[in-house]
Image 1: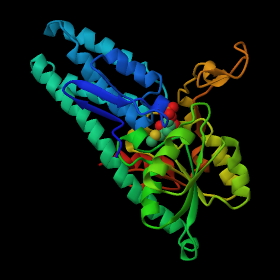
Image 2 (image 1 turned 30 degrees about the vertical axis):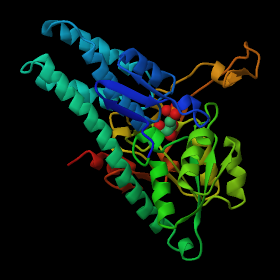
Image 3 (image 1 turned 180 degrees about the horizontal axis):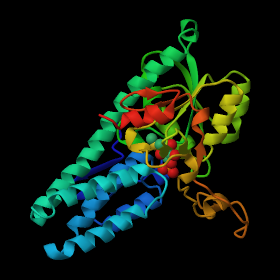
Length: 354
Ligand code: MRU
């Protein structure tokens, strides 16, 4: 399996996803500002991977600290603010920095800085490991739900599945969230073909998901984002599953721009639309999707295609990186604890109890 990120010998190493699949370049750094830049530029990306990378970025930052113990709280506060400012939508980032802050708060008074830093490094590794393990559990719950929903169809044929953006190893460390469900479903003989939509403007579906599927030998076809409706109309898609960057208490889900349009098309054609995501992606403090901060990215991401100018440099652009799919369009939210269906308000709340 590809190592999208790793952390050894106080060094953060990441596979620069901007150049995949044409160039496989690993970059190692001990500089937390470079790690923040990697998150901002999408060299590392995908909600769970952003979370794990944020944990390691905090570790790089604390290892750079040269002052005494009394000066550390102010430094640490600024460091957390810097990391938090890197990308706004994926709540996994804030989940990870909150975990690092919790370790700091619980141990700062009693520990030497050396012991504190060691505990924080352990915490960052734990965030990474948890995300890897969550993927396997999500896959199991997802496949079980799909088996139930398609029990009749599966008696006679396999299924065609649509996915959007990249939710695989590159986005999660482990086998992936939505792509983890697809991988396990394929392994268990449920899948005919995967349809991966390109995910304009940065093409995570076309470049990254296709690369992962090709690597695994899973049959797939890539489509432009706007093709999903005609494929549904022609019976070429049985269900859709995507990941999430933030899910609110009522099941509204922010994910890569284009997800909402796929979900609307799916509803129109009576096709179940699932979300697969770890509990770290659920922001129970927000009651509904309109509260989610939606990242707006640089206009040149649209006016240029990988450095090639395709529109005038002055073309006005609206470039939202994410959209919000209402929970009412989602058949099930598949987490590592269970797949929640129906009443999201109660079902998602219960995931946080016990
Ligand atoms: O902008 P990106 O590439 O970080 O967006 C990624 C997505 O939207 C993914 O679908 C989401 O983070 C889930 S990753 C398991």
